[in-house]
Length: 350
Length: 284
Image: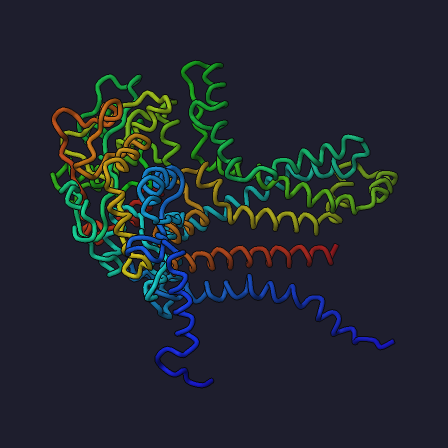
């Protein structure tokens, strides 16, 4: 093979000239930076649909930003991102993950730093959730859900779940066990990240014959049938299941609520960063945030996105605003593998 | 007319299939084997290495070997039940002259049209709290309840219902291949039904039984949706554990090692049983 001469050949120059001639007919190339295609790596289902109807079509289509969704489970999408980390140009512009995962990716140096010059709406973010690598999109506080037909005195603190009146009637969600550990630690020590202090309580809960569910959707039928009466879940679930006709209500533990945050980051090798920043800015617009609150029961992360009317009532936090506690993601990351192992063995009981 | 050498023709015919198998099965397996020797790292995902630690972690930890044992006994129990329940159905279908025979075969095949996840969800409705059985028990004896969901029984029942059609269909074709006149001859010589079955039908059907058993055993060893949905979080089998390591913890090296351990266990048992049956068959 012969070496290619450096610099543009005559043929390339001709090609460039022809492309320049076509520019006026290609508006998405000719216009300023934030346009073209943006690839959003996201969960499927309702979330992806709502991204389309609240962000993509109303806010980005008018700016000539065409959104393509790359739908999959979070671990699979994260694996893909890690696998292509060495490529100068990846194929994802926006990555939707849970906040702990975003922290890990940022630690691995995969996420683009964000600030208000790139995403002006960042200044409206709720301070508890603000960071400079992945913007919180929606959040939901952990509450204790209870069946209103069978529980006359709602639980007021996590330790109520250990009391005899709920023995065998507590439901635990396997996929969010780490958040349950945090809730127990918070109640016991005032520090949600004091995992070891929470272990005895969790061990008691599991060994007392309380129920553990692998899939979130098995939780609602269990609450309805009386298999369980209470359990720590996200407030959004209460709202969602109430809509489906299950007689449940949220009790906010007096020690505070750990929050679940769903976030969006921009990979360092995103092909269209300008459009990605525009996307993040659009997702923080009040109209987009309200759409998610209305349909999924998650709370807005932007202080500008105030809720009104029936939605505001449904999602209302108690009169005395509960303490909302974002996990310390660094401590969580350090402890996660060990906690995973401990939890598996605890459930197994071998 | 020129004649092509026979070997070449055969080679050309099996060539494409061999290439597909090499490309789609052997190559990924080699890659998987390579992954299983890598090291997991939370931030960097998978670090190149040549270490047996993933295998050792599994083999030296009673928790993981316990999951393998659970999987093995569930697979053996369901295989045995499939044999015991499948044989009479297959025999009846194979020997049937009735015009309803094809309807019977269809009834066996129909459940295969529904995915295993959907069927597991169906069983959840039957076995769960407030489900069919529970409601029936409560109606007959107020205040009582049967909690069958999230038990090994539910898992065995679920896998059995999925695997039984495979067993019945395999056995049916084998039994149809056994000449009915052989049985009539045994009968005319005064053999009781039980002797007829034990000394004539069973030995002749043995290779088919082995094939069916191997088929349902492999399916049971690899069951995913059924143990996950019917066994619940506290019941662990290999396939859901493998999936969790791969897709939830993103620990590909360990997941690859689990996949190999599961595959080697299944293949060893399958090969051993085939060898055993073949020896018996030759002796018979």
